[in-house]
Length: 331
View 1: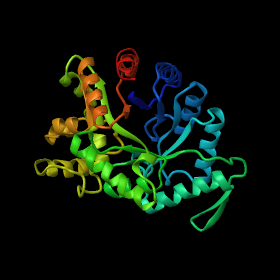
View 2: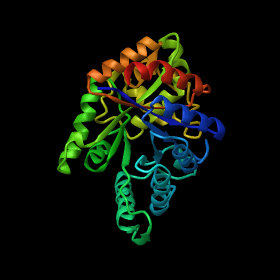
View 3: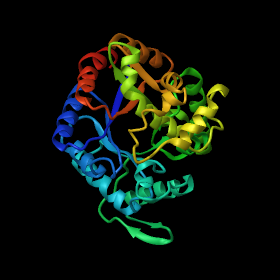
View 4: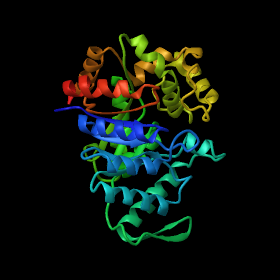
């Protein structure tokens, strides 16, 4: 068995983005996602279309869009267009919304709205018509099923994903206990729909960096750790396996996090004494050998699909290391 790796790229440089997408595809990265945050970087579906046009093998799609900023008919048409550019490789990643909606003065969707959104997009793709907020909507030309995935970080969302998603990105943790709990939630939801966790395409979200030491690799990831922590903790700690000694810090992180900065909340983990905890829970960091060994250990625990996003200033350096050193050893 080989480990698959996926990457979500955030970028405001289209030429550099195209170069990176081509290189990652050639290196064997299995999935390339594009973040959705119009206040912070280039438009999501344009980058997703560029990903489709400039890859041959990788799956390409949104990571993550939401029900708040786009009507489901617009989303359904956009991802079907991507699927025309990359037949059979497109996916639609959805969530309730984070910096995208906060930075438009709006609020994230709730899970019930997200479920209706997913069902509407699916009906538009397969039937050409559906309903949204009590009104009819149409998509006359798609006639296909495109995989829809959910990014999840809590018990309710994981159970919902187990019940209805094709793809799941689990942003919860990669320690043994967190893996066990997340799989339990997914399996419970899958059972409700008469299927099993084996029917899901499950990816595990990590923070990822390679440097001469763990400390050096962690330093530029502080903002990313804050972002992942905020996503996990923002709706409370119930069912999220947070040790008692870190519960106050986790609650404060959720309260103090500033969405407009998104990748600029780098001081928070250190100020709240959460850096090591978040790193142990969410990150694969260290020198090349340490990173490869950590990935192999996760594979032995049934975690064989890893997905990370990066806002590092020097993404190319990390992508080169991924392509030249890590993937040949684990893929």
